[in-house]
Length: 118
Image (cartoon, rainbow, N blue to C red; front, side, top):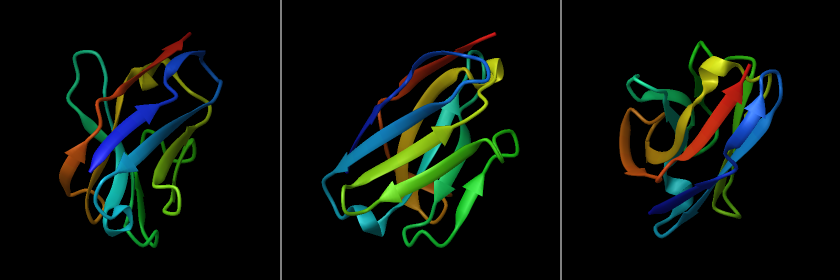
């Protein structure tokens, strides 16, 4: 599976941004999909994930109520809608494919930079 992110950029605090991830290769619908991020000087952390059947989702406490993950299996796409962005959301965001709610990640995208200015 190849994953390619897009949609990152520079935004002001309080604004919104949507990240997209295009998947190609093996059967997309058989994978759990999600987003991780790595901020400056921080470890990579899971932000949001959705199970292969869309029946379960996970959100980090820091983004609950602000971020929404969604997937379109017909288009092999996964999205991360980010609302009310904060400077602490600044990070490289990575799309990932794996098992369940990404307890195991099998594939990573190359990452897209999101910078939130105060």
